[in-house]
Image (cartoon, rainbow, N blue to C red; front, side, top):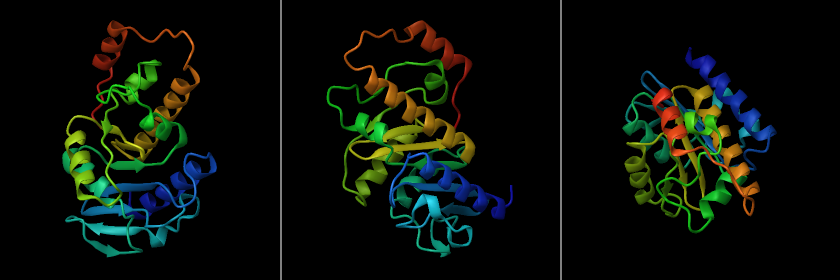
Length: 212
């Protein structure tokens, strides 16, 4: 896909995310890997109203070289790419149900959500919690980098999901699966539940290893 096509895809995905209420205001950011750098949504931008010509262009070292100034959370994206050479896109949102899970007490920080559905296991696998750091704190980038070594999806505590995929469609698909599973998890609180068994979960993980 050409850079021009990727620019259009980012804008189309942003509009879709915004129209379905997965982000709000000037929250959330998207990036795509290029052969010699990255495209990112600009800082302070509304994902529902992106201009393909104003997307931020970063070179291979992460330096801003064209377009509007990149999202102030660009370091989160670069930290994921640094550890996941097979990832072609990263989506970071402040989606309501995922954020809600990120603030719940007494969940396992190594794997926040239970295996509710087969597709959650196939598209997310395990979901670790990255400890809270203030936005812009260099320690957050390092925590994301450490987590991304083993996981393509994670929840930032009191913040939201960061999800990588082989391409933008895959990253968006996994992000949506995470948000829907978070919504199901919250809806099931207080109800008797029947999650997938350990054996069923391991069978799915073996059959559908995530290489994002």
